[in-house]
Amino acid sequence: NLKVTNTNIKPIVKRTIPDFEAYLEQSIFYQFQGDIFDDPDGVIARIQPIGARPWMTVTAKEFSAFPQEQGTFTVTLRAYDDDSASVETAFKIKVINRPPVVKQLLPEKVIAQNKAFRFKIPQTYFSDPDGQITKLKVVNLPSWLTFDGTELRGTPTELGKYQLGIRAFDNGGDSVETPFIITVDLRGNLNTPPVLRYQIPNAQLFVTHRFSYKVADSLFYDTNGYVARIETPNLPAWLTFKNNEIAGLATQAGTYTITLRAVDDDETSTVTTFQIEVRYPNLNFELIQAGKVGTRRLIGPLREGDVLLESTIPEKITIYAICEAPVKKVIFKLTGPYQKTFVAERFPFSLFDEEIGFAPIAGSYTLNAVAFNDSVQVSATTIHFKVQTTQPLTDWDVYPNPFATVCNLKLPDNTDIRALTFKLVSVTGQAFSISEKQLLVMDKVAYLNLASSQIPTGTYLLQVFQNETLQQVVKIVKQ
Image (cartoon, rainbow, N blue to C red; front, top):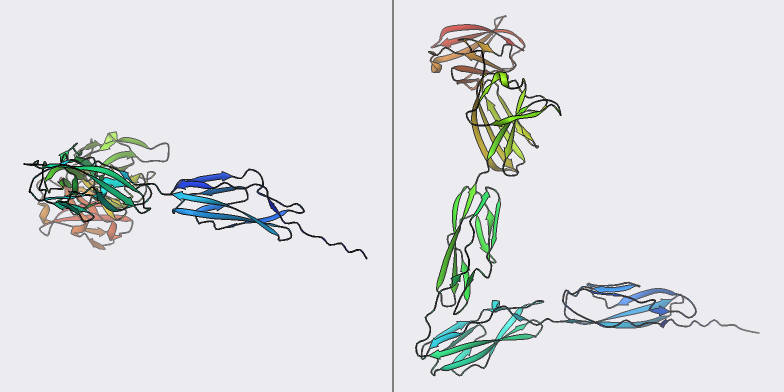
């Protein structure tokens, strides 16, 4: 009998992958040149990466990485054929530490013989591109000087020039060194305060807006030492100073003087100031001809004290509120011959729907608007304007008549306004009293807002009393 046995041949490595070197957060990308593995008597069913770190990506076609840790890492690729036999190849990724660098040279110090000396070495004179400064070391220390890891101390007994080396180490164990020269003479140099390089410009912003200013390291410098710290005394309550940044949300209008004080290693200081002007944004009004899209038009701005001629403005108008700062809501309140309170919550912020508007009845008006951004008040303004008719009103004239909600009555010039009361009587004898809240008197015109009375449509007699004595009866029609 002939027995045939099929023996599987293991897959083989066709190409190896090179090793890589990179710094922290330096991208690596390598595209495999052809197949890495081959199977002489079948196919490669799958490839399994082993040892890949979370910041590595390995596929059958390429390798990429963005190193997040230092060290040497081995990645193994294991290939399986269709009979589950396997073969491996490996490559290494070495993530190299970048050494620290010197940000600023230490100034030469000239000190007096037999006088106590101390100098704190700031770590900020060094930086590490991919880690942090962990310690400082001083080399070539003279016998009279000691270093505790942060500060040099001692009293020089002999004249001379001493060159020390200040060495900074990072968390990867690498270091950089910079020279520090100390000259000892009989008198030493008097300390000079820090020098201001440039003035900070004044700033302007609106209430509820955020202010931010990053104080640059270059703002001050010290000729015979270093700037140990920057202080901001008497900051307004809405500002903070952290990580060399002055920041905060302006909550109140006003002009604020900001003081910056630079203090050097000998505790002498230099002061500079700048101002922040915080104001409420302007809230302006525009008079708009009401109507459908295509018929609306801008009549012009509406300002305090404006007098509008009834004959020169359209039959229906509305009013837009325009704010210098972003807002999400405007509350309007119009009082006068026509009265309306409305909350506009979309742009353009309009007192009335653009298609409806209102008829500009002759008389004096007061318009108040308050603008909000979310729940915070941004701005508020009040203006007064008049609509003037070309036909002068006579005493006891009522307009408009018929009326919808507000009935306006021209009063005689000699009327004692404080003694007036009003009553409305229907043709059937039903009486409606008019409260003080429904009454507004301006320029000898009584504006009667009857919206809250909910009186039905019909003809009424408006009775006017002065000191409880009937002065006049006027016939009016409610629409």
